[in-house]
Image 1 (spheres, rainbow, N blue to C red):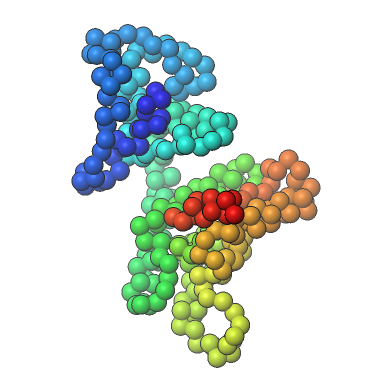
Image 2: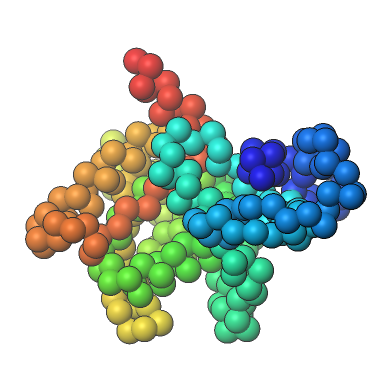
Length: 277
């Protein structure tokens, strides 16, 4: 099991064309001295729960393959905090991992994904050569945030503070924060540039706030922090903001407010560099 938890992402089917190399060698039972004759033996395992229970080796390998080597790769064993690592592991290995979303959920995901794709296509065609820090290739961020906000609303969250770098910010502003696309496109046209000479900021540094109406009727207030840096030094600011909001409403159990930090490619190396300094 440890082999799958550590190396399973190397054998995951992440390339839809099947061209990317996969390395299933560390997951080969023979690599651990097991043979076909061992497949019908019962082994004790904690897979799918905290308590140890018996399971046929054949069934365990099949479950591990479907969990770690499917179309999603999980890489989390590098996390130093054991409780965080085990929290992720319990959710990855839960018994309902094969449960497909309902048709309504699938349609919602498709709708939000379509919103994200159309926004990017319009901006790319309308404003050729403009700097946009496109979300192209990562449009799934929008339906992911949509589902995260819905889950937060169901758990009683009423305030959400988000922080992210430039990439995808315009799409999130339009499709998550509720900023009017017309206002974003007006910033591209910049018809009043002479009015604000020496003042203001570029559109992909800007933040926004708005209200999110969840499916259960709950309302969340969403704030996306301004971020003038291409790295994510804004993260501690976002965490401080949500902490202050929690304190202001007396939410000392930290149940009513949530901070969402969206990392870019360079975020983790940047944070590591800050710690070394």
